[in-house]
Amino acid sequence: MSCTTILVGKNASYDGSTIIARDDDSGSGRYDPKRFVAVAPDDQPRHYRSVLSHVEIELPDNPCRYTIAPNVLNNRGILAEAGANEHNVAMSATETIAVNERVLGADPMVELRPAVGEPDSNDYQAEQPGGIGEEDIITLVLPYVTTAREGVARLGELLETYGTYESNGVIISDVDEIWYVETIGGHHWIARRVPDDCYATIPNQLGIDDFDLADAFGGQREYLCSADLREFMATHHLDRTMGTPVSSNGRHAHSAGFGTTVALPTRFNPRKAFGTATPKDHIYNTPRAWYMQRRLNPSEDWDSPAARYTPESDDIPWCRVPEDKVSLEDVDFLLSSHFEGTPYDPYGTTGTAESRHRYRPIGVNRTGHMVAIQVRPYVPAANRTVMWVSFGSGPFTAAAPFYANVNDTPAYLRDTTPEVSTGNLYWTNRLIAVVADAHWYETNRFIEGYAEGVRAFGHRLIERTDERLARSDAESTDTNAWPLDGGHGDEKDVQGVADVLEAANDEMADYLREHTTKLLNDVLYTSSNLMHNSFAMSDRWAE
Image 1: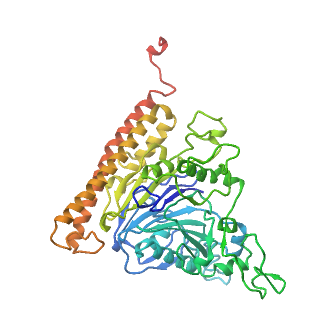
Image 2 (image 1 turned 90 degrees about the vertical axis):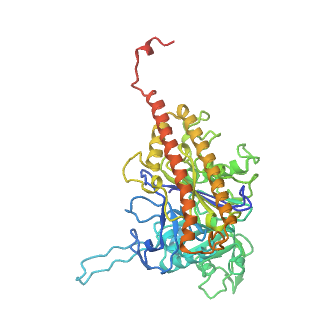
């Protein structure tokens, strides 16, 4: 499995924004080049066919513009991974999760079944398409929704209609709300709204640990789910909540299908009902949640024998209130972290050789990108959403901000090549990571300086661009000239705003090109001097 997610509610973030962020990590032994592109409505397909599952879906004829960070290669489909649309709805998809065997037995995955035999033969069986998956989700949802709740509803309808062939967590946000959706088997799903004053951590496990069925089937303020979830759980005995059994005619009330009344508790723990808790989880998944929460709630005891949570705890909360408001720097650090300050840091000097490689770090070698999407309430709609993007392994790079509401993206991020090249950000960052990894202590000062510079320049650029747009809006006498309130002026005026945002994005890309190239030079020079076959006559007489 791959990917790590952190979600930050608007009252838990440093500036009142909703922030959704995820590392997109390739599977073991695979490295997927990434790019950053804008998709125009005319480029959105009207008839969609999945590369992996062959499912075919007719799409609405009214898509909106959106910006995504997909794979370069199309061998496994679009894989949009992270994006935001012109209505300031953001998505990140997907966080790979797992459900248990009871769920899989009750609602199997919808997998592609190839055709059997020849079309004209008596025993011919036609191909049966699979369901939707990570390849498809953003492309099928993001261009058609104006709020996060609409996104959840559309995704739920697609899951119930076509099913899915894999277990996934999907994040959908807008300026007010963050929703996290988890697929349950082939056709079922649950969704929980991240509390405004909380952050949530998801490390490749089914994470939601509390679900209010009364709200999901009532006011739907904080919880949503597939329409038959109660019956599905009762029929297949999926609830594990302890308490006084409700019986009917001598039978346990959960025994649906035997002439009894379905009865479930008002609240239950989906992680226990649907999820997994295996020794592999304790190596690969739970330590990442432990570390993220350790950093955001540092006053809690995380290390003593009496600590409530350890790296291998199965009950680490899905969400909690941070001790301080969470910044984008916190998010960037956490999603590139490798257990700094603990015996588990692979670059550390404490612990043992075994402990330093005991757990899977968050910032791994096969990260394709990290995208943190910030939807800001204090600026007009046109420049509200900023996508903080980094390519490659997190410990060796930094996230830079780009406005999402644009018609085109900078070539340095857009035109990533399938093969290695220093002409684009993705491959340059990959090269830096590979060279610097072997000489962590000698090169880390260059990387830290680079990261600090990227983020500082990015913050200044965003503030400067916001101020320019606000000043232009205030000076304009035409109410349609700068449609910054979410309305649509004439095409020329809308393009004027896009031009400003695209110019800012180009400026950020130019900064990255200059300073990433310099970082590569510094890392390469330092590492070259440390090669095992280095030799100079002066070395023999060095004291």
